[in-house]
Length: 385
Image (tube, rainbow, N blue to C red):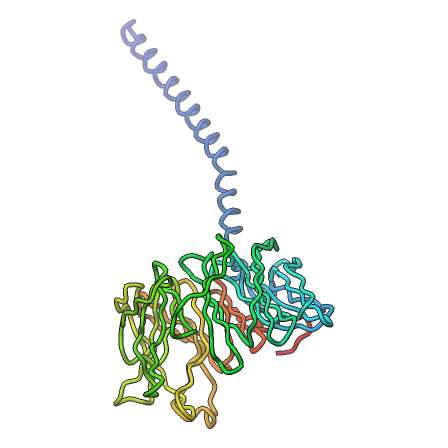
């Protein structure tokens, strides 16, 4: 073997050893990098697990309200996807509580020395309006925040009241005060300004449209009818404008308007039409109608994230003679998709969580319906459904 061959072989061995050492070092570095990344991956998994909403769990995770000192007057609605508000009467006093359905944590929100007639929660749960009645014709309106801080106290002499929150500006409310003869006076309550000012509007049961506008049905008292035009008016002045005609009933939520009409050739069906807040049609669906002595029965309903949740009968009939159950349905106003959530239901008041995963139902909102698992849970411990 000559010197040149030895030199080439040495060079080859040197290069081979260098490449071998380089590969080992790179493998070690890659393994080290993988070892450092693993905890991040585990943390992502944990975060993903923690982000699952408790409302999507089974009913075993619900913590019913334990026995309370006093009489359960009823649940009042939702502050968030997990926290509800309910009222208890204890002798001549009434207490309003906030309650976490998944932890059982409870806090006193408001204590009243007079009976509480109604509790109304703003659309996002930012405020709670509590109406207490020291006397037959005396009403005290108290606005509190979710932490119990009192923002307003106003007294109104009235037999009954109707309240409508503004979903576009929750510092703004419409309040209509009634006498025993159902004469009424309407007011604009401004929480930010701390004011309650009388306004002029010819119908008391108005609802909010965008830009401080009010919507109401313009009934003709001289020519009674089942249908009326939908009127829009500014809250600050008398400037009525007809939006559409032949409406039986309507409702307004944030960015949505719903109307109920009846076609002359299909009087056994109700047509629910959904529009955006510029009154552009998005979708519609029909349901069987239940007739009453002078009109039709509109089943209870609620809104959740732009979706419309309601009960529908199985067939058309007289409401007093109807022997069927109801279906709980959800209708996506944007897409027009309708889904039956549960069968064999009773038509009762309903209040759904903001994310639409659960609903309080019953004449006292005393049961919880888990819409994903299709299960009912009593709100009160040891309370049979």
